[in-house]
Picture (cartoon, rainbow, N blue to C red):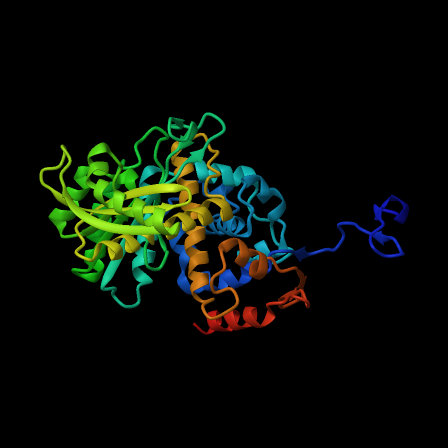
Length: 438
């Protein structure tokens, strides 16, 4: 291409700048090599790939399943959630380096290859993948915990097409899937993610999932204390019955009704009077013994009444905890961290990009996005005490993973020359040394 045919732009300088795409083997995602080193230490993607059966004819195989899993997983972590992005990234020197390929070697998997890979998964393989994520969580507990908090919440995934088992949901007012996500309430680690049809209730499959999880926890840690924490969408008697029968503690939101409001009336009047006198925010707690018609016996209910300039607000919790009402409610309020983690999974890692037709393929995608969260959460634990200690995944990606680099291949080595002006060089080198030593 001659100079006259190149695109020329006038920027904030006196001379024109000539801009083209002839930089050569350059990548904007060199920070992924750091995650790859941590991945090697954990053996994470190898374990994921080991859950899948390779039913392809060997004479037609150019990409191993491990390479495809790594390529897809690292695309998600870098912010390339669409399979179509693979058509460009398959030539990216850093992504090729992640799979151990030289610049001169064959490109990575294309979009059709990845799409076929996602759509051939079976239900048995999905179960093995979900079990593997649970095993990773259990192995990462270096010291057996004295208590495990299970935070469970559901979320909507709006669909745009004719995906299997997507339905109109009256609460969300559009066609959705209705995934269920399980987190560790203390560490924030994602334990599992279950895709459900769009028309199911929030509490669907919760009891069976908790049963399997408690069984695995007790097998790994013995008689560990387990606390189940959920919002009002999971107010189902069979869950209370199971927790009480198995010796589990629970604190779960209750849907407000007239009987509960009557129980809170006296406290509400006290709060109204206090607010009218001071015009300052008021919050009071009480407890009562309450039995719904569907309950075999009465249970402890915590009442919170709050009044501010927006009016009065009442909340109710059912629990078998023995702590004071205010302490119990404050413990329940920490469940809000689970919602923030769901936002990270959906907004930062695009876990709601479930656009395959087959339901099983979309469950596979959800697990891949969950696996990306697990690996990045493992990275976050090494960031304690640094400037990124409290950073969200989007910030970590922007400041630590999105590093420009030139890749040069010599006779014996593949050189990755990172951007000289990268502001977190010291942190990058510290983490790289730590992962290499481990």
